[in-house]
Length: 231
Image (cartoon, rainbow, N blue to C red; front, side):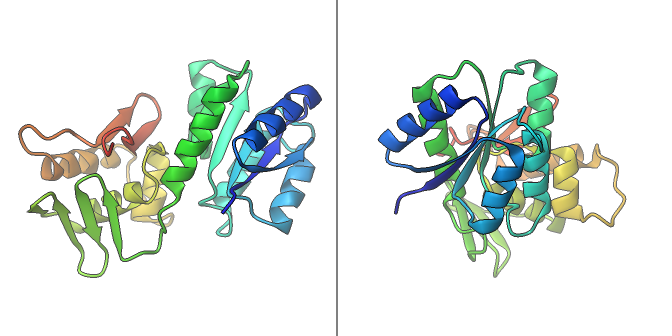
């Protein structure tokens, strides 16, 4: 099945270049020149992935990303942010808003195509399935058991939910605030640094001598399951 990509980009020449190259890779592409048109397109039909320019006319790309993550219908929709803003604090802000990936202009079309394919691969597994797998890690939601290779991994309830959250979107960087909302709940007050404590416990349970740590710490941003681990 051909993946559908919504591209929100106001620079006409770049939009045409994106459409040409992504179509050449076999994707179906829909172009929007401003934020309002992108939001309308999302209401009409959900694509498989969204490429968002940060500085769109009307509603900004960063605000569109925030709205995508806030709505149950679109919260798991893959988003790649594209922008001329390349400073570290801008990348962190984009990731914290919920973008799955972040690229700065000028763009390499071959790199963009590779990143689109990588994000789509990560988003492919069904989120509601009974069993989630990543590399040699298996999580069974029915019997609430985790295995790594041939051995069982014993996790507390919070560490189990934390691993389940990370397994749903391998490679995506979750900020500590996002993990707090997803694992502890939005109505529960917990210190942000509590996430670090439980990630430490999860790592200790998952990893034995000689095993690679699948959890990647992203400086100033949060945590992700490292998608290079499961190669």
